[in-house]
Image 1 (tube, one colour):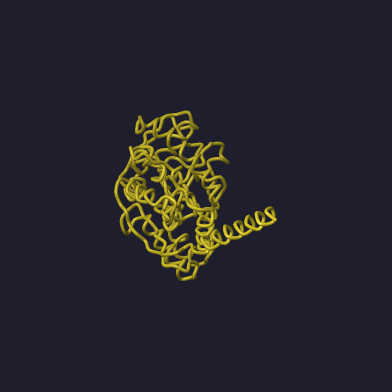
Image 2 (tube, helix red, strand yellow; image 1 turned 90 degrees about the horizontal axis):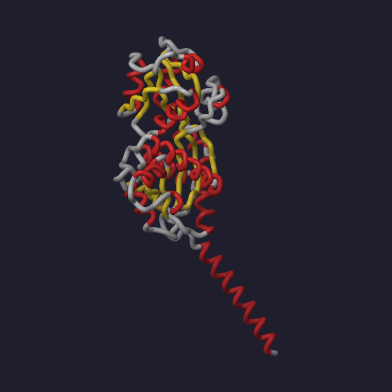
Length: 319
């Protein structure tokens, strides 16, 4: 009799626990979801998140409102702190690009990528090695054989372009003079006027110049050729071990539940597969769609964090 009652009570407890868990999962999301941009309105983070929010709501991919909030400051340090203050709450999703890794590496915010929950990488911005059509260098081999120190343009010290140049120096076994400009427009202008021998830049600023023949892309920093530039060979296929791109993804707060994680992943993946997303964001911004789910994205972030740590240390940015 006692055993029967004990078993009955245990079964009832399991049923109650299962019911409570299912109710908790069913209750998410219980309010609107915040998309957190680490930079101000109109910037790359803000633009991506607003495009995402519109596609999600236009296609009824979430039953709750999506609200984009801007938390600028400290190269996304403010946004990282804000998201971390909501640990365990899946109602927050933050844009993640290179600053998601570099800001913790170069500042004392006592946070890093492991404090957050990777949800998805949406795409990459490959780097191109670009020359002026009227310049002296027509192939990557020409650059390798040059008997002088070449001037290379890119955006900012410690940027992905700077890191690609470091990798290229290592691969070529020769010194390159990296000139950091304030933005892509200055890099493009310098290459147009032959002030630099070549540029390392993402695809957006130079795409039209490549199409019109003013610039030639000699290499792209992806694992395989991309449909945007099918005739541009990769560094890898030319024998240079360079496979680095800017990434665009989203992360949630740390310690969220599996149900919350699954909901966010399903929503973001469905969004990324819509024609509206491709037409209104991917194509206009020259992004290469390259989706990674949580586990793959986590591994990718770990690898990229080490690349940044090593390169920024070499540049003296990390002491």
